[in-house]
Amino acid sequence: MRDEVADAAYAVGWTVVRKMPETAARVAFAALADRTWHRYGSGVRQLEKNLCRVLGKDAVDDEVRVLSKKVLRSYFRYWLEVFRLPEYDRARILGKMRVTGEKKIFTNLDSGRGVILALPHMGNYEHAGAWLVHSGYQFTTVAERLRPESLFDRFVEFREGLGMEVLAHRGASAYGRMAQRLRAGRPVCLVVDRDLTASGIDVEFFGATARMPAVAAALAVQTGAALIPVTLWYEGEYWAARVHAEIPVPDGGGRQEKIQAMTQDLARVFEAGIAAHPEDWHMLQKVWVADLADEDR
Image (cartoon, rainbow, N blue to C red):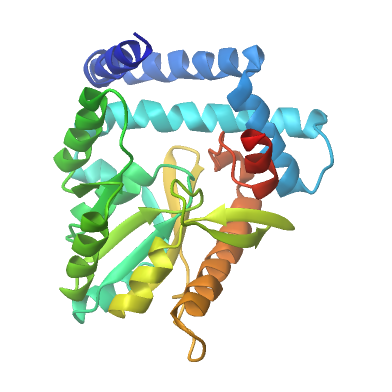
């Protein structure tokens, strides 16, 4: 029943919310964000625990509470825009995007070299994907398997409607197809600040051990594609992004050592981006190993 309710809610989002007057929709989603924050459920509590790591605090205080409310506003803005993004035209998608360092992406792709764009759950990465497509570069990504299957299908349809190639998250076939795309000189975009598998890499992240996916670094090592981190945030009515310097494959060490080192470098870039814009890091799940260990007890 819970799965069916979730599917119905998303269906309403992509029909009713998509067509609502924008001002009314924004007011409604801001109110939903504040209501969620006041209810103080498990997701908000975990968010504040994560923000304590980011801010270097031992416990939740007024600063963390104020910041978590801003995060909820940002997160609900993301969902509002997800539902309405199919209505945005090319001029809005390109014109409202403020990007620095994008030539690193285009230069590699135009030379025939594949690019892995690695992102955290920041800002609106769906819009960033639409921006890349409208800039002339269709890309491949993966989608987490959701329940029920109809909900997963809705997300695939949404992303494919924006011009993305979407692969199911699990399975060697998805990894192999991404490698093929990269060898063909195409881009692959991955959100990789939280591990969804049993094969994550332990990294130091804000002074504690966190677990992140190995896939981005592994693909770079295997294919020779450029591993380029991107961090995202909101600037008023605009979407903003910074394309960071490529993370190179180390000269020495074995394959696993290279993947470990590159994933750690990626975590460092994410650290800096999140520290600069913590209100736009939408992480309401567990990332750090200590929290994951508590879950297993």
